[in-house]
Each structure stands twice: as structure tokens, then as C-alpha cells.
Image (cartoon, rainbow, N blue to C red; front, side, top):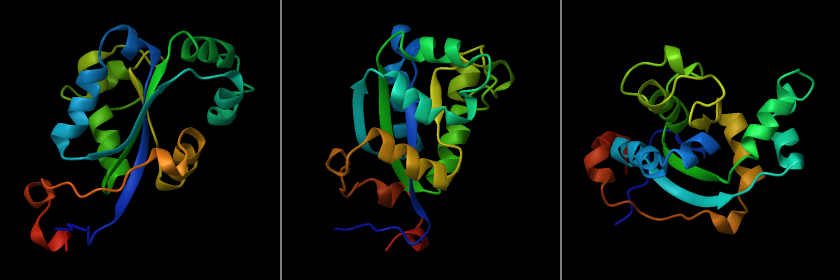
Length: 162
């Protein structure tokens, strides 16, 4: 039984940052997305080298805080996730909460689990265009899986799926 989406089916990248790894929050973070009804289509643990950090944070490379950011992101392995769903970029950002964790709403990952701007547990793609670039940066095509998620009939309304 295929439950293809009629709406906008997107993918988003999430990174569980070193503070999330070191604090034992991997399961909590993944669970938040699963409870929302989103589909994980890619997941891996990896260490980030300087080249990938310079590419990923290209908009911050010239800023004075980049060295500290790079050192933090290299202080521990990270978990990268590719998450799929209806309007998933916005949904993931709502689950994560705003970047400044001390301003994030209770109930969001950052609102419940963080107090910092840098040590805010997760990175999430901020647009569909950036998600596409970020996913290609961290995943090969054969790292991602296309499968039916049976629970979609209980997550999306009939007019949102085929």
C-alpha cells in the first residue's frame, strides 16, 4: 500500500550537535521527530572535518566566532538525519524551536533541552533550497531510503495522501 503525499513532500537535514551527543539526548531528539509523525529516511554518526564545516557554515567563515563554532562542532561526533514529510522544513523548525535556545518555546527541543545559541542541541535546515544542498553535503544517494510508512494513514488526512 503506497501512501504518496498530495501536498508538498520535502526533506530536511537535522544535525544532533556535540552537546546533544555528550548529554545523551540522541534518542530524545529522534523521538521528537518520530512522535510528530515525520519519517527518518537517513541517519548516520560522523565526525566533521574543517572542509565540511567551512562549506556548511560558509556564511560564518569570516566572522570572529567561526573558530569557536568549528572547534565545538569537531569536539565530538554528530548524528546527521534526513527527515521527510509534508512541509517538513517548517515542521522540523517548529519541533526544534528558535536558534537562541533561551528564547525557544517550551515543548520544542531547544526550549526544553538547551539555554545557549551555539550549544542548542540541533541544527535544522532553514529553507527547502538549503535543505537540498545540506542533504547532498552529508548524504550520498544510497544513504537515503524510500519506503512506505504505514502510520501515514494516521498522521495525514486522506486529502493529503493518495
